[in-house]
Length: 221
Image 1 (cartoon, rainbow, N blue to C red):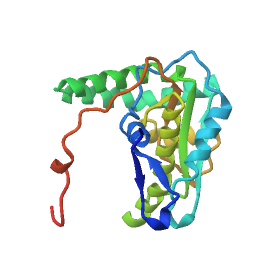
Image 2 (cartoon, rainbow, N blue to C red):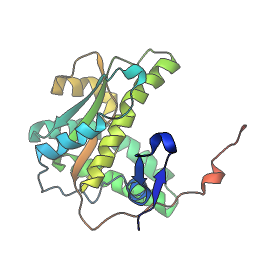
Image 3 (cartoon, rainbow, N blue to C red):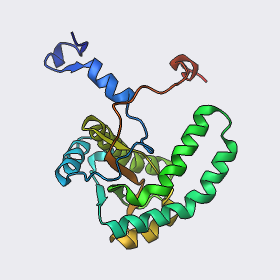
């Protein structure tokens, strides 16, 4: 029997299957090595995930988000080249810092993704209207807080449909070049590049994380 959560008499019809929700939340991994590079992803499936992402909260109900979906092979190759301009040096330094097994695995998978990014069938770039470059911290946080929840919802929806994703930002030092390539208006800020594809293998398990009480601070640090 599924575990469910009830949220009081005022939400008597809001019943959530906690088991399914928790599995989705704890097994949505960054997928880099297990992306199926040869299987096309239907346009309708991507739009379905974006439709779910549109239900995410936004600051001031602004809904200034957008998703640039790149499937054209030449444009994916160009984006991958922009990505590798940063990735080569960044990942080399990250490899030098990787001492434990988990960090070394993550580094290895990140290097692999950089090498094959041009072959990933779908690149999704979440954007938010407005530039955050010179904004005060409160306003910048509000802008990012209006697009990152939607992007994460997209990734969760993709996971539920058998798609793997990874949150990457290594193309952002060349954001202007990417904007020119894709025709993104000057007044939109890119926040990530999410490689999206069917994943190979069976499923994913929760990652090793420290106990919640070791990172939680009650009332004071």
